[in-house]
Length: 326
Ligand code: NAD
Ligand code: UDP
Image (cartoon, rainbow, N blue to C red; front, side, top):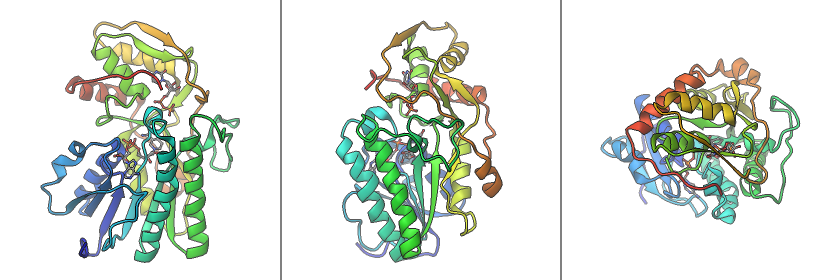
C-alpha cells in the first residue's frame, strides 16, 4: 500500500466503526484532523461511518488488528478502541477477544513506536473485576477472575495495559491509558445486549424490561459526548501524564433504578421481568475521577436523566432488536 495521508496530523482510530469509534471519528473530523478508521466490522457495521466516506479527509480500512497492519501508515496519533465492548459479543469468540486485546495492541504499539506517534488505549473499568474498593481508584489493582466468562475481556485489557506501560518504559513510546466506565448514548447498537439499549428498545417495543438478578447491582453511566471529550483531552494531555485514568460518571445507580428511569420516559410504563444474573457480573461499579479532574480538567456534564432522554429519542427514530442475555 502506498503512503497513506502523508500530511502532518493523521489520526488512526482502530475500532472506528464502533459506537465510541464513530463518535470519535466525527469529532476528530470536526476538529480538522485527517482520520484513518480501521475496523474489522465485527460489532461496528460499515454503515456507522458511511456518512463520513464522502469526506476526503476520511479513509476507511477494513482490517482485523490481530493481523499484521497494512504498510505505509504514518499516523501522528492512534486511538485503540478496537474490541467488542458488550459481554454478549466479546464472549462469542473469547480467543479472538484475547488476541484482539493482546496481539492487536502489540501491532498498534509497534506502529506507534515506528511512527513516533502517540497512542491511547481504551481500557475499561472491567480491569477492577468485582471490586472490593469502592469507588474504584486507579491505584486499586482489582479483583478479576482469570478463568470466568468475562476473563477474555478483563484479562485481555489488563494485559494490554501492561503492554502499553512496558512500551513506554522500554521503547519510550508515548502512551495514554483511559479506563472507560459504562458509556451509553445515541449510536449504540440496538442488539448489543447492554442495559441501556436493551431497556429502551424493550420499552419502545412494548416488551417487559429484562432485569438480570434482583437489579441491585450498580453501574455508573457516562453519556457518550462526555466520554469523547475525556478521550480527546487525555490524548492531548502533557507527555508526563500517561494514566491509567478513570473516565466515567460518578452518578452511581442500580439496574432497577435505570429500569425505573426508562419506564418514566415511556408513555405506557412497561412491565419488569427478572431473569438470572450472568456469572461474574460485577455487583458495584463507580469511578473515582479525581485524577481526571486534576490532570484533564474533565468531568461529565450530562446528567443520567438528560442522557437517557436523548438516547430514548434516538432509538425512537430507529428500529430496535433485543437479544437474550449471554
Ligand atoms: P463497539 O463494539 O461498538 O466497537 C468496537 C469496534 O471495534 C467495532 O467497530 C468492532 O468491529 C471493532 N473491532 C473489534 N475487534 C476488532 C479487531 N480485532 N480488529 C479491528 N476492529 C475490531 O464498542 P464500543 O462501545 O465502541 O467500545 C470501544 C472501546 O472502548 C472498546 O475497546 C471497549 O473495550 C472500550 N470500552 C467501552 C465501554 C462502553 O461502555 N462502551 C466501556 C469500557 C471500555
Ligand atoms: N443488565 C440487565 N438487563 C439487561 C442488560 C443488562 O439487568 O437487559 C445488567 C447486567 O447484568 C449488568 C448491568 O445491567 O449487571 C450492565 O450490563 P451491561 O452489559 O450494559 O454492561 P457491563 O455488565 O459490562 O457493565
